[in-house]
Image (cartoon, rainbow, N blue to C red; front, side, top):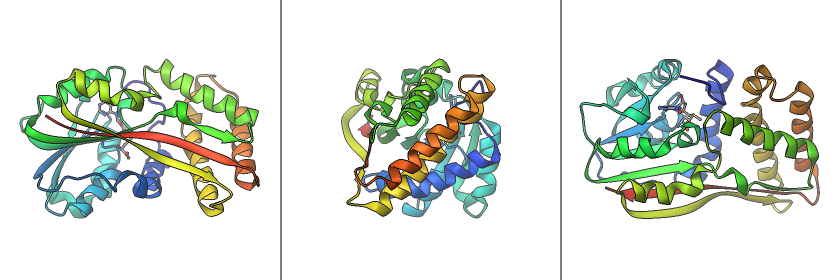
Length: 264
Ligand SMILES: C[S@@+](CC[C@H](N)C(=O)[O-])C[C@H]1O[C@@H](n2cnc3c(N)ncnc32)[C@H](O)[C@@H]1O
């Protein structure tokens, strides 16, 4: 793999597992692979979403594709008990070349990292049987809104997104899912907003999601520091500002991701 915003160190691999738990109630209410036998998961990482999928759909087999062998090794370790229902493939999703065809596909937080997401969906289409269903969940980072307006968080967030773009990724790819699916010949395309809108009416959730957001933001820090994109004090300022938002009586904390479903 070339440069990747979040890195592949153990803390980040653990963060992906925690993230799947924290965001699960926002991601999974709509996901439906009922009747599917074998789903292709692209950018499966350490298997955090895979674990949820196989528990929600007990008859499902999943083939997990990731471009990074460290992620696949960790996924195998995390999913030892479910090994008989899983296959792991080390491949770049922009050039899928798998022997089998699948009747469903699942992508979560991966297109944002890929320079040519159109090629992923084109490549995916060739791996799917007619009538297959696809579920994609992706970031739309421009939707992030917070009050009070704090410069440390604003500065870090802008840098985080700019850095992702510099690596060829797209922190707003969620906004483009409908067009990307259409361009690649998918049908029955539906787009759904997901995310959170928090303020003092839900203080515990506000605390939970600002804490989650600190970890998400810090997951880009090692790469940004190493390339001198940011300074250590900018990381600390971001963290302090998020702690202030959690404690602020008038705080607003808002974010939308996009979920898409389609068939082929
Ligand atoms: C943020 S992680 C998400 C992992 C998992 N979907 C989840 O939600 O826990 C993104 C994953 O996409 C993988 N990835 C990035 N570019 C890829 C590519 N071109 N082909 C396949 N996987 C890729 C990374 O290695 C990483 O494991």
